[in-house]
Image (cartoon, rainbow, N blue to C red):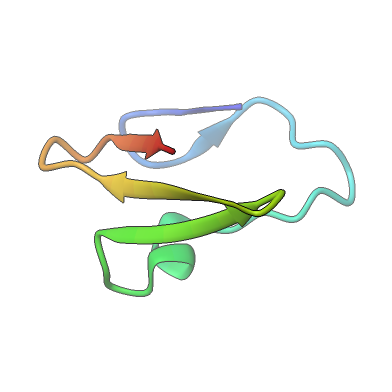
Length: 55
């Protein structure tokens, strides 16, 4: 799945796959922590509006 310059999604999303916008996921913040198999991962939005995931 890719995103066009106007913010619209292009490509197919598999039926039944949960989909969230970054606005919903981040709730006004620029960083969240995800816990996966007991490890913390930081997902952040950069100044260039890119996503970076680090362990």
